[in-house]
Image (cartoon, rainbow, N blue to C red; front, side):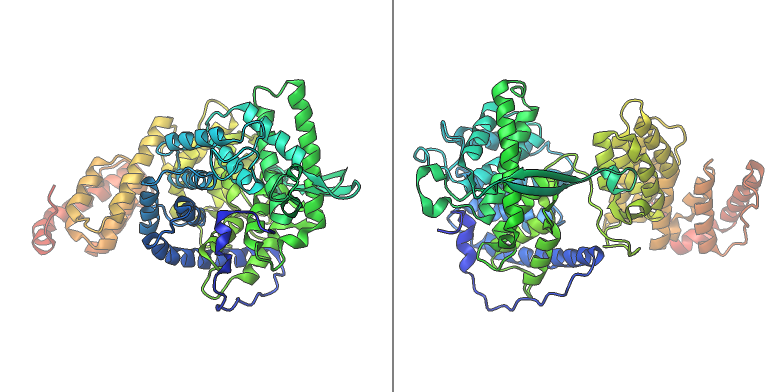
Length: 599
């Protein structure tokens, strides 16, 4: 058997009547980024379409995994959590109890996606803890692996089940769930002992992910790691069991072994047993085994991108190995660029890659979904130096030092977690370059930077004051501003909003810039029956808010009340008086024509 006994792979005998989409040569990273975005957009549309049938006729074997994996892929591809088919899938899964390793792990992958979509894990953490404990209990005694489910005969573990169990446990750890160190020690011992080396030691080289400061042009660091190691990998089964047809190393299982070993070693380094001599020795052995895996992947990289039956699972496993080990290039191979180009080439006219499982795995590779597992992973730089925005995502801004675009949301999240002052010049550039009409949506991200007394908090205070107009405000004042902004957004989204509701909100809110937003909404709806309220609101001390009110009243009334040339209290007092006089003169006629909002 040449494929891992991974339950999803039974779908690879799908029909092939759809013609593959012809690939265009990718000449630059900017073009690759564009191709990837287009592939993701088409792929998630096709996968969403398939979800309808999948939910209607859910397979009886591994139903949780078969629903959870595509749902997670859709969420990681940017589909909204509120999308009806996503909600239907989540509701379906809540009625099922996962018992098999694949199903438990895929459920954890989905819960992680839900937590990221919501911005917190409060609603899913208890379930994550329960599932993680199931994986802990299912580890094969004295062997350190996993099989299809707890209770399978001893020594029945395989490295596909091991891979998914390890990924599920990594997710649990990243959500603050404590797991036993000896479990990871057993896993590391299993993987080190089960590796098959092929040939003599030879030079190896990987390019590791540079710190964000270096990728943004702030510092220079060497990202090359050079070593000597014999190529080594894993098959589906443990070679010490004597099943030669299953235990020879191949692409997907070698990448799975690398990612699983990296998870175990990272856990041991952070655990309470890290100082024990036996654990230090195990970590050293594991690091050498990782280097052997790197050499194997470098030497046989073509196996990851060849037109074979397990292409999508191999690339899925490669993404886990590359991102969990923070490797950008195995030898001379830029694994993400080459894998992405292969997927762009193989994408079909309908947007999918074959079965819904293939499509899910392809999307998980293209979105580099494992980056979501690491809480403080640095954001990606998405394009080359074309100077044109790479996507419709408005949180992407061009950073000169990086010669590319970066997500401001991801940048601020990273700085919030790492507190690196060296990144503040980039943060200032990113906030400065953010679209002015949408800059207020940075407020919740900046509030998360406010922690204690340091340079990062000082930056957050300055940026918040600039965006909100609240000068020398406390964190509570800025948080209250954000609550009012959220209320304004909810009003804008209401299909049943009327002028009376909007008028009451303007009277109740305190933040001038938020109130200005609602006045603009009244202008767009042409609710001229609110004119009297706008005249009364001119008593505000905020010059910015006064200008907005004056502008709308001028547009509605064609009045000749001129805006003052100088922003003095006396000048504005004259303007306010002029508008009050206008309203006194015209209010009855105005309300007879346009009505008045109920308050």
